[in-house]
Length: 101
Image 1 (cartoon, rainbow, N blue to C red):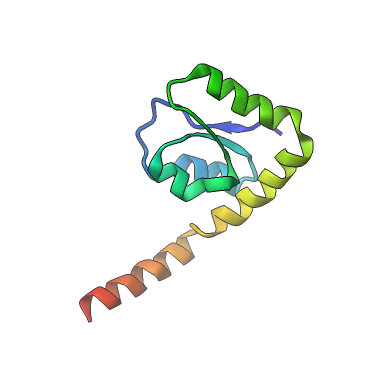
Image 2: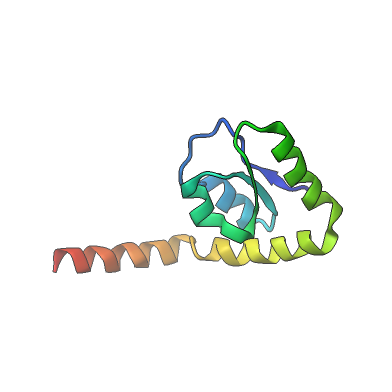
């Protein structure tokens, strides 16, 4: 299983690519940015944006430890379910109803 990597050049604050990778059961290394950290937290391995050594350490961590990678895969699938289209649509509807009531 190959880990997914979120490019430090990406400006996606939400991390849709990361959620998509998680939905496929991939453990991810992600740029440690506030929005992405909020979405992924401990379900991925953060690295310091723009720091190749930090990225290398995150990837090494995932590749060396099979049990940790397996736990990340399970956490990734669970995290991705929080953002599926049905759940997201329901939450958006509920929020809209609260705001407009």
